[in-house]
Image (tube, rainbow, N blue to C red; front, side, top):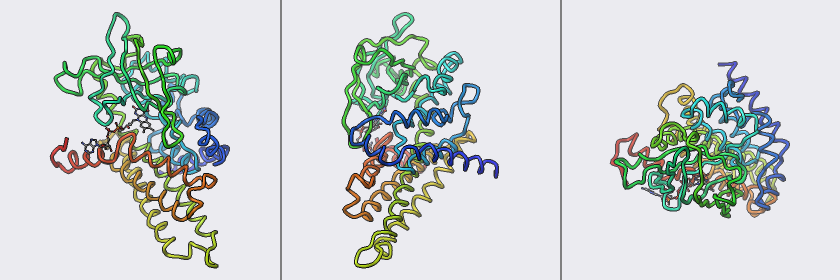
Length: 386
Ligand SMILES: Cc1cc2nc3c(=O)[nH]c(=O)nc-3n(C[C@H](O)[C@H](O)[C@H](O)COP(=O)(O)OP(=O)(O)OC[C@H]3O[C@@H](n4cnc5c(N)ncnc54)[C@H](O)[C@@H]3O)c2cc1C
C-alpha cells in the first residue's frame, strides 16, 4: 500500500515536471489561435504517460486506471487541458480488450512509442448523439474489405491522429432484432484519407477543441481491421465507457483543484476596502464549500477506479464519479470566476479559458441527464424513461 502511494506520488511529480514546461501562457496562446498543443502531446507521449494503460509487453507503462487518473488530474490541475491528448488513454482499450493478437502486435507498440497516434474515436452522428444505436454510417463487406459511407459529427482530433476507432453499422437498423446489434468497430487508418474519401470540416466550438464533421465516401477498410466479431461493436464500445468516464472525472478533479488553488491565491492577495477579499465570508465560504465538494467527488473517482482495477463491477460508481466530478469542477469554475471579479473574464487570468473547458463535461462524452437516468434505472430500479 505504502509502495503504491509512493509510486503514485512519484508519478504525479513526473507529470507536474512535464506540465511546468507548458505554462498557462502556452495554453492561452493556443486557445486564442485555436491551435493543437503539438509540443505538449509530444512531451506527454515521450514521457510515456499517454501509453499509461498499454501493457508493458506492448511497450506501454502498464499502469492501472488509478494511476492513469492521476496523470490526467495533474495535467488539468496545472492549467493545461488534457483533452487533446486524453483519448489515446481510453480509446485503445477497445483494441486491447477485443482486438486480435495480430492487431495488438501491429498497433499497440507503435502507439506506445508515439510512432502512431490513436486519438480519434468516431461514434456520434447528426441523428445519433446520446442514442448511439441510431447511427447509420454503413460499412458494407465487399470481399476482403469493408466500404464505409455516411456522416459523423463532433469527431475530435481527426487531423492529429493516425488511427481512429470507428463505430459503423454492418447491418442496417431496420434489419436487426435488437437495436444494439449490427454495429461493428474498426481500426481506421486515417493516413492518406483526409480530404480524399474522408472529408473533414472543423467545427468551431466554445473551447479550443479540434472537433469535426466527417463525410465518408466509399472509404475502404481492410476486413482484418474489424475489431472482434462483426455486429458486436456496440458492446465493445460500451465496455470502454466506464474507463472513459472515470478518466474524464479525474480531469474534472484536476480542473476543480486548479480553480480552488487560483481562487484561494487571489482571495489572499487582492485587497478591496483596505482588506483582503478572502477575509469576507462571502468570498471564503463558497471556496471552502467547493473544496469540500471536489474532495468528496474525488473519493468517488478513487472508488470507481479501484473497482475497475480489481475487475469488479463499477458502472454505478463510474457514472456517479463523472456526475459528481463534473458538477464539482463546474461549481469551482463559477466560484473562481466570482472571486476574480472582472478579472475572471479577462483572458490573461486563465479562469475564463478553464471555465469554458470544464463546462464541456456537463455535455460530453455523456450528458448529465443520461447519467441521472442510468442511476435512476439501473441503480434504483425506477422505470426506464425513454
Ligand atoms: C467538443 C465536443 C467533442 C466531441 N468529441 C467527440 C468524439 O471525439 N467522438 C464522438 O463520437 N463524439 C464526440 N462528441 C459528441 C458527444 O459525445 C455528444 O455531443 C454527446 O454524446 C451528446 O449527444 P448530442 O450532442 O447529440 O445530444 P442529444 O442526443 O441531441 O441530446 C441533447 C440533450 O437532450 C438530453 N436528452 C436526450 N435524451 C434524453 C432523455 N431520454 N432524457 C433526458 N434527457 C435527454 C441530453 O442529455 C442532452 O442534454 C463531442 C462533442 C463535443 C461537444
